[in-house]
Amino acid sequence: MADTLTPEQRRRCMSNVRNQNTGLEMKLRRALWKTGLRYRVNSKLPGKPDIVFPKRKLAVFVDGCFWHGCTIHGTKPETNAEFWQTKIKVNMERDLRITSQLTDLGWTVIRVWEHEIKECLAVVIQNITESLNSV
Image 1: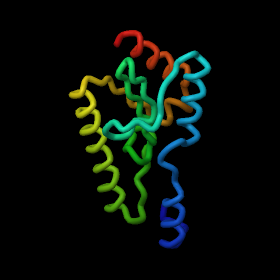
Image 2: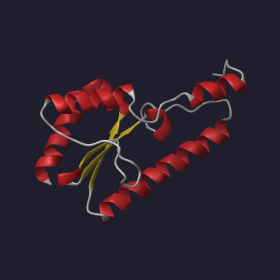
Image 3: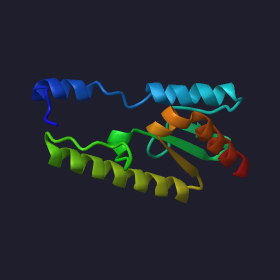
Image 4: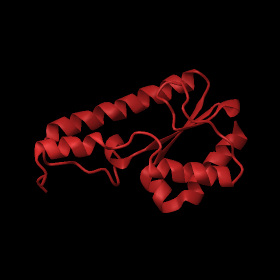
């Protein structure tokens, strides 16, 4: 489907997309807090994880389906398609590089898709809890 916005309107729209403290991040953080799990945000670790459990060396990233190339829900815009294809590919490569860097530093990394938080938050919480208990 072709873009219905002018390039200037699209630029303004995309520049307003939040990259931290998104609604889904906040939903996950509130659920973790409610279950008694205490975490940190605003870490200086590579890649700036969304949620960090420093004592257990566990870093959690919440990846948006569009921005990180989800194979289930990621969309491929028709307008400026080459730019977006390249942008998403670079994001995915960076995700792999950051995960590898953190792993090399002794951290466990969990990447959560936005649709997982929307569809099965309890399972996400359970996976994080299990990872914390196994570290």
